[in-house]
Image (cartoon, rainbow, N blue to C red; front, top):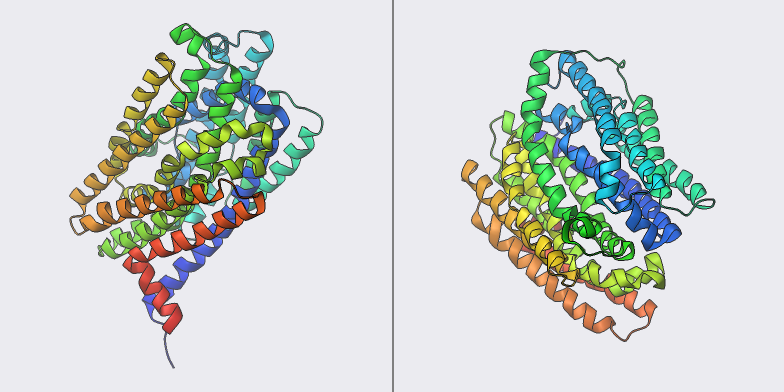
Length: 490
């Protein structure tokens, strides 16, 4: 009687998790992308530019009051205890209530700050406070299941909630086309998230205040809060600067231009949203487990880097085809977004590629690495301030964002090298730089090829460029070469 090799079992388990989470993320994110595109096409750039400051408040406070129950429960050694889970549930509900009160109190000043000082817009700022208040009621048991490497509940909720929300928002868009649509869409999504969290839970909904557990939660999440806040400012600070240009710099930028920049950033970050969550959810628990067992992490790191930077290469090439992508997704009315998508291609690729080092830092329980690295993204925000102050082309904000992301990526790699000396410099620095530089070159060639081609031929060129370019560049990583060799030769 033969027994399966334990290492093969773990390999199959990781592949199954990758397929399960990857499939659910693909469906969920596709539904989310479709929902955002439907909203944008329905309300137009001007209404989207009005809604953006309200959504930015939502994102900013979400970072300031971040507790990230999934990461906290998975990585903390006490995450398996009922007392810790009950305390985390209590903190999450309390966070939603505090969040709501802050938004209500600041609604009028925020409206004035963003040159939206009319009653309807003030009501919009107040309304967004209902979203975190509702989402704070979500049951956290799905994260307990994820800690135990049971991915089914996560996959189900990741798939079903966005699909239902997209259907409901699509119906809403048949009757409404104002700036309220994205706000109501977020509220619908939060309600569905709460319902789905109870559907997939296998434990009772419990909460209580526990001083020791609360302190542990705060200590773990504080670096993530600081790091996340910095990243938010680096990613969306430019949008806020443009929106509040009248208040800050004494000259007005139209809401159409605000909407154009915001739409470009939204589209550029879509691949990163899918890939980053996939990498973090699949590999962080595995990294934490290997660390607890005292095993070598260098081999696993190369595997994660290979996966992340292959996705990054594909992202660069895809976004370089912005002039073709925008008419397909948003019609010719939104052609002004195309140049922003091209300019943001490197930034979008770095967001998804950097997920490998972020997942490793989280898996090692070293959330401070993310915080320290993210501080360097503020260099991009400083550049964006100068762009808006000097009334330069808003396209330059995209280059500033990419510069800040490059600095953050380098710092994360340096700090990881210090705590894990076995990680090779080639894996950390040289291979990633080579892959993204080559991918950018492929993107430039692709742009030249599609310049005078018809739409169908342009689409074929982009697909071929991604398949061939990203496929060849994936061979830079030995883990990918070994995997291909096993599949080809057994």
